[in-house]
Length: 423
Figure (spheres, rainbow, N blue to C red):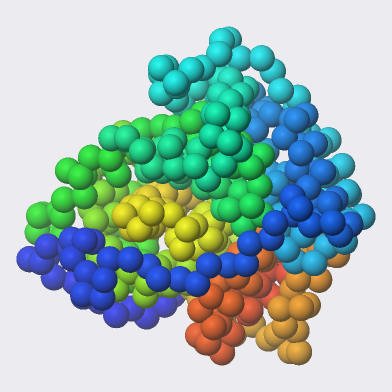
């Protein structure tokens, strides 16, 4: 059912994620940065103008302040997968149909009170205006503004990028990859308006203490932990329906169980464990697709893959002391979403046995930008996330692990599910 694991379980051990035998940094080669702002060719100019239009016209949070603006995500993904200018225009036209214009905030935000309104999306316009003012004061150096407001302070915003189902994290990844200040300021706005209780688990080291109950365990394998969570009867019958709305209740009622599994993950070789986490993120999305699921993929599990992709982009670029906390907050989100989605069985054989024929990444890229799902932001982002993971790790596992997952998704995808009673 689940994949096989290498377990390092020991109920008497102390699973400290900071006890590394191979160094505490994750040394990855940065991905290529595409500076569309100054590229004179038609396609990058089209992307630049569309990103600016989206920034000027549409809110970062809409639909009763519940949905996030994904336009930069799909525009960036499609561009990097080879989409032409006409397709980029089509994407923008499609996305803008449901987006909403900016609305005024109740008041302005200043350097003296900018943290007072964290977690309040009604201040989204004020936050973006504030960060753009800081951009001017810092000579339009958007990376300097990010350093000031993401990484500084006792409770830095970087420790809560997984709030809002990880959309601030995803947005930030595209800001760096496209070297785009508009997306960067939007990412800061998203991080500020999405801010929630999950920051405390990274800000307060007390929550990272290892569990000492007789049932405690530790392992380097994310998939082994997910298997244990699947079998953990403390989560049985907790929810009637899947959905992100389950996450808050989960932490209120089962925080100790969540933290036990969160702290069970050891990272003695951080680069290897990050590789394993990307492996797990793909398995969560594609390997949880059993016959009983139909051809609809889980909308919430896909965010675990696309946030993992964002981390891969950011790790070589952020201060090293934030690398492991960033990976660990992704892991906390992963556990929360997995339980909220009723802990589906994960079986990598569901796609590792999938026949790819002569279809390679060029075919997958073409599917992402030319198939009937080419205007679906999450479909396109998921395929690109798997492609970048394959490039990062060599795609040697199971003779094309990521390629087989991507091809299987292209072959059978028929929309998004996992909404439960909200569908």
